[in-house]
Length: 364
Image 1 (cartoon, one colour):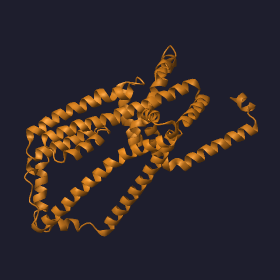
Image 2 (tube, one colour):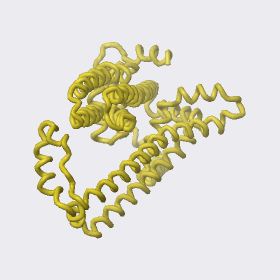
Image 3 (tube, helix red, strand yellow):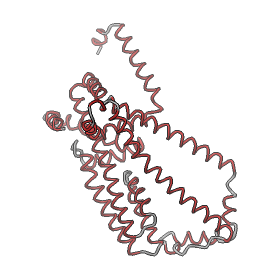
Image 4 (spheres, helix red, strand yellow):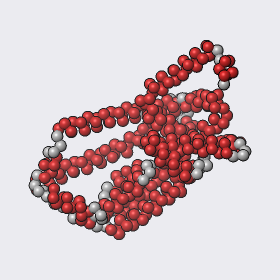
């Protein structure tokens, strides 16, 4: 080390310090947008094979700008349309709720018959309802306890959250467009940088992490949509109220660990509240089987298949990434676990691990 430092000229040391300062400064400037930039990178990696197919369908003159514009617009609509449908449905439900509250406040709120039928918590809720909601004007008296200052703070925080979410979404969409447009050039430069810094093994490891991100997107998104579709059909057959909306929410929740069981539990409680106990039991059995197969067979195979990642590491990657990085960690966690397991295999196997890895990389 001392000999290596002695061979470095003052000019080279100054360039190294300057480059480090520039790198740190750039990361500091971008630190506020790490989350949307991360989402853009994950979406670009996950959908890149589909984007290349779209490029092949279009004429060469449209592949530079038209292809990334169309594909980015399609991905944007995939995110925006369900949100708009959900907001419209919530608006209709809110109007009905306001009308119900207005009518109920004049004559008191009678205890619904189904509350006493709910298991475990139904009797307690019904007793609270009788004590607080039956008298005329009880709803107004409860809402009157909320002062205007509290409402102002809640409104301000809500506006800030909405504005920040819109900014992040806009940054992610804009970044995604340029990643699609300049993805080939950017990818080659990243490979050159990785090869110069980490060598051939580092380049192969980066390929594995890319495969892990694509596998995770399939395991999280596609499996979530499949679970939501099957359970949505179950909701329709068993007569769950607002089956379409609840099925869409189930597909969204199924992308998050333990999200699908929570949505299934809500649907079963709604059926129990209607008095449809056999349908609730049947839906619980059917939904449990669907969720069990998805979480214990399909998801681990899709996420860990390309990188030969064991189920335990898939599990730890998903939950650890979710706890550390939020929703984005669902994709980053398994990718980091792939890198960790690959390094472990390389350092502990008698023969070089990457010698067998190169064959798999060529097939992709």
